[in-house]
Amino acid sequence: MSIYLTALLKCKAGEAAQVKPLLLDLVAASLKEEACLQYELYQDIENENQFIFHETWQDAAGLELHTQQPHYQQFGQQVGPLLEEAPVLHKTQRIG
Image 1: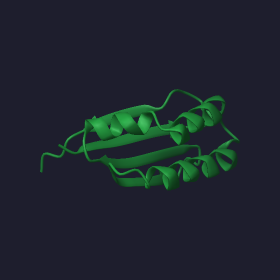
Image 2: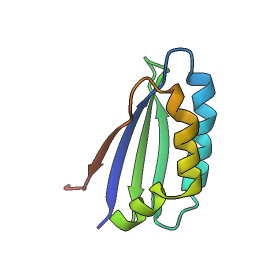
Image 3: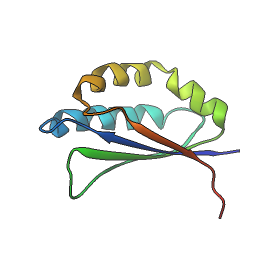
């Protein structure tokens, strides 16, 4: 069963320009993963410090493998200090 993930990331004020390339690198690397069906990044129009990922993974195992990838681990180390708070993750399933 596919897993739909929405991830909300809020960076510290003044850090959006530094965070954005890290996010884009994560998108590019994640899209190459076999289990990745969708990996889109959005930036809030009214708050430049708020970013939203919309992801679709083939299954839970594919998502778990994603979190173990070197590019994902490196991203966490690089972006962690630039975030205002921990990312908020919503794992969902499509019902309609």
